[in-house]
Each structure stands twice: as C-alpha cells, then as structure tokens.
Length: 111
Length: 114
Image 1 (cartoon, rainbow over the protein chains, first blue to last red):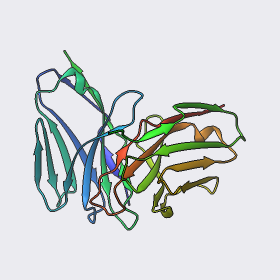
Image 2 (image 1 turned 90 degrees about the vertical axis):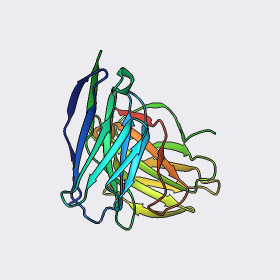
Image 3 (image 1 turned 120 degrees about the vertical axis):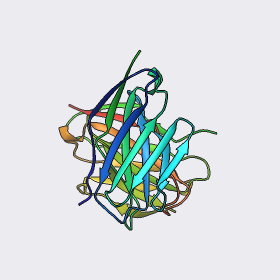
Image 4 (image 1 turned 90 degrees about the horizontal axis):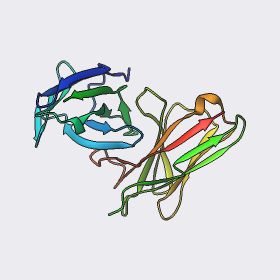
C-alpha cells in the first residue's frame, strides 16, 4: 500500500517542543519530506531526509527516521505561535517519483 | 528569485464546464507536477511533466489532462467538471525528474464547482 499516516491534531504551549509523528508503508521510499501549510497557502518545504540517514538537524527542526519501524518524526524546538500550521509528511518513491502525502497534522500553539 | 506562480488564484465554475489552470515553474526548473488537495486531505498526485513529456500519472479520470510548453510552463485542463473536483490545485516544480530534486510548490488555484 501507499498510505502515509499522521495524527490529525497537536496542541502545545509556546516555548515547548512539538513532536509530529508519521508512519509510512513503502520500505523502498528513498526520500521523506516535511512540508508546512499555512491557512489558504501552498506547501512550504521545511526539510527532508534521505533513507540512509537516521537523523537530520536544521536549526529548530530535527528529523528522526526509524527505517525498521517505517516511522518518521519532526521535532520543533522552542515552538512559536508562527509555527501554527498544518504539517504534512510525504514520501517519494517508485518509478514516477511523485510525492505521497499524509493527511496532515494541525499544530496549534497556545501563548 | 520568483517562486512557482499559478493563475488564477480563485475560480468558480458550474458543473459540466471545463477549466484551465496555469503554472510557471521556478526559473531553470524543467519538471512540473500537479496535485489536487481536497479540503481536509493531503495533496494527491495528478501528473508529472519533464521536458514537455508526461512522465507520471496518478489515479485520476481522463477528464484531467495537462501539457508542458517549451518554456516549461504548464497547463492543467479538467473537462466536464463535477462537484467533487472542487479543491486546491497545486503545482510543484523541480530541477529535474530524479528523486533527489526537491519539489517546490506554488500557492495553488482554489477551484469551486457549483
């Protein structure tokens, strides 16, 4: 199957860390991505990880990949109100190389 | 540098009509992909074009078609519109077709079918 699954909602307090989780089913996926979508807007590429990596850090963002469990997570340190958005996990695989998205996790940051 | 641009921003059509959506990729990008995002869902892949040829197609009916022009811009056409075609249509561009090229998305065209 080609399902990417995410929890639908996450609520955190400003200054806390947020962890958004994702599971995917295709073990042949080579690249895994995190996109951010603000209301009424398109998708902003946040970060990605290649399948031979376990971790990638980019400023406040940390991506962890567990290939055995097909589990991907995005940690946002010191979460700000401007981080409130929907976060999509996506895998890219197969001969077409198209992105397969989860349904998105809506992150709400309370002041 | 300009990002991916799409036009129009919003569009309202009636059932049975057809629609044409347009996308201009980032300068230097040769691959364009189209996605449909229904409210509350993640984007679903429709087409990928590279060097003016269709390189991938998602699970969408033949009412959906697309093309890519010599300047790498692209059009998505949808015929015989249904209410279920109401969605945000996203265009993404990348340098090439290979998996290691990131896809960058435009702001989308919001299509409402009444």
